[in-house]
Structure formats: C-alpha cells, structure tokens
Image (cartoon, rainbow, N blue to C red; front, side, top):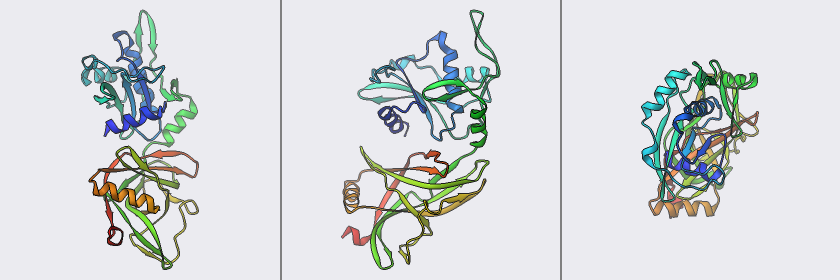
Length: 306
C-alpha cells in the first residue's frame, strides 16, 4: 500500500506530507534526519508523511538510489530514542518506481503522541544544531520551530476524526426515491471522533480507484441501510454529521453514479481488476481530512448486471 501512496504523492508534489531527497542523509547530517522526522510527526494533517530518497529536489526527476545506502531501522530508532521525546515509531523501506529503486521513511499519522520535542542538545563542532526543548513542525515544505498557534492546533487535533468501511463492500444499484429510480452507490461505514472537540462533517468524497483510473463521487447523505426511500434525506451539506468527542456512529454513505461510471466500473469488475477506496472529507471549518486506502469489492444488483 505504501507503493501506491508514494506514487500518488510524487505525482501531486504535495510538500506538507512528502519530502524528497536525492540521497540518504550523510553521517554529518543526522540532525537533519531527526529534525525532519519530528517536523512531520508534529504536522496535524491526517495522513501518513513520507521522506523519499532517489528523487532530485530541484526537478522532481526520479533518479533512484543504491539500496545499500539505506540504514537498518535500528539506527534511526537509536537516534530518535536519544534525541526525541516521546519516541516516534517510523518505518523504512524501498520500492520500484519508473524502473529504479527509491527509498522512503514513513512517519505514521495514527498512534502518535504529539507534540514531539528535542529532549537532548545535538552538538557538532561546539555548535548546537538541535536545542533541548525545541518543537519542530512541517509547514509549506519547510521545518519551523512551533509557535503558540501550532501548539494549539496540535492539542486540539489530538485523536482522530476517522471514516473507515464497516464492510469492505461498495454496492451499486438502482435506489428508489418517491418511486423514481436513481443509479446509486453506497458503502456501510463507521465514523468516529477521538479528538478533544466536537466535529461536524459537511462534505465527503469517496475515491474509487482501479488501476490508473479513479472517480470521486460526492456523498449526498447518510442513512440506515436501505434502497427504497420516500423523500430523499437531507444532504450532509445541509445537515452536517455531528460527532461529540469520543463518539462513533455506523451509517451507510450514499452517492449518485452516472450511467457511464457504472458501465466502466462493471467492465473493470468483469475484467477482475482490483478496487480501492479512500475517503476525503471536510468539517464546517473547512479543515480537510483524508483516510487510509482500503481494498474493497464492488457488488452490482441483478438489474444492472442484465
């Protein structure tokens, strides 16, 4: 799954969640490694962050690396245990991209205990390159020392506003609204809020991906699992989904599909292609969230299969 995520990030060049480097950190730049990891770990954007090696930082051209230049994870862990508090659990790996090997460090968004700070001064040639107590954060492609607003954001965003599939099945069928039929997709999902504040979600997109093709229908409304309705329920833009801290609900998310979209999805299913979905959503304050990517199965009703 890291492979798909990194390839997508390299294509979009998003600098708050990815940093690219032509080579792995040299021995005299270990303080930069520590600073980069801490900065990404303190960024509250709800998605995993990646430091990618084997890409030129001026042109974004993929050049690849010698895999033997990547260290064992224990080397990184030793640095983080020595200079960072609390400990950050990261992952190091490699993958094939455009016929070359690139490396990466993944800094997970979940299960992190922000804020992370430098707990021991890092000195070199009698110069302090990292100071005890400093809290770094990644903003707009650059590492900064966190200010009061950054710390407020970190504390207000402890926990997660999360949407995950309850069952990894996307249903495609003709739903009935006041006896009118409408091509509809739906997926039963769990929506939970472990943040310290009440959340109100007012838009959700379902990104359905197969191979290099993706569609992103907007969720119109949520309801219990059914296919026949009287009046169409209020949209979530009209009636946001409100979740108090520590609460969780299970609902079906409904979205409309065009005839052409259904036709293409059916062709891919018959060709036995794999499907993934992810959720992109915003709250009433226009803060953006993005879920992990989930493998799903598409199931079509009998009348569509005919």
